[in-house]
Image: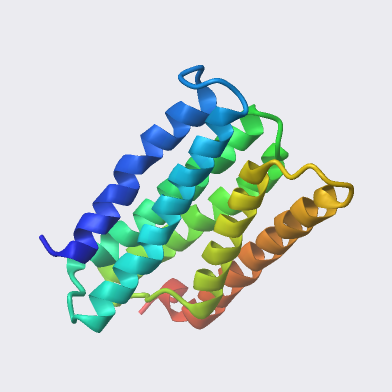
Length: 180
């Protein structure tokens, strides 16, 4: 197993640790939220690092192509579900983001059954970066007069990019839906 795939596995393993620290009384507040923030930043960093290593060292594998986006979805979705429970974000936002991921996964499965691989688009990558930044900003629990506007701005941008990336995937891969 190469280093890029090990980093992907590390990201998956950090998800339950992140959730445990954020959602239980293992650590006292606000310390728990800051530890969760550090864990999330480390996990998010592995996303960028594993892709860079895989491409630069020609270590791209089938495992990595499958697990990297799955690890991203696990990390982001877990954080967002925790935020709903903590009343930090409305559920409808999480529903939009998770629905997009299910739809794209479905399109990829249909395409794979036809022998076509759908690569990640730039819109999808930008969407992931913004979602991760949004989560980091929410975990930072900023306490100054206009912090709420920064948080809300990132939430809105993340939702808009989620919708744009969904439309981009569908429009670029519309032939997947057409019967031969």
